[in-house]
Length: 168
Image (cartoon, rainbow, N blue to C red; front, side, top):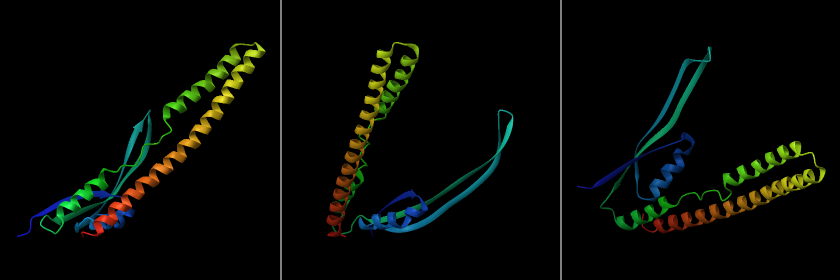
């Protein structure tokens, strides 16, 4: 008698086929697929005004099974764990930098309207302009670094999928 393991995942309906394909590459067999679609309409009252609210839930639940006695089971599980441990790299451009730049811009405008000395206005304006330029330069570099990190992750994923194809 076969020793089976099972797992279930939920995904968006448009991701169903790619998710099934990915799981099958690691030796899983689709046991069931069920689309959940629920539309709920109700009214809510906020600040004395009645609103009609419609909430829609739409996802697909996939259930997979896999034989634990299949050939190369340990190697396949090891590769699957490596694949699943890869996560999308976090953005390199931090939100804190955005806040810092905007705080500098606001400070520049506040100080230039409070302080009427012309040369201070020029200094604060130049600092603000430099901050804006610095912000856009860092953002462009961050986007480039993020794209490179994502491309590197996809290469590692492709390598793992090629390796697991030797076993399944």
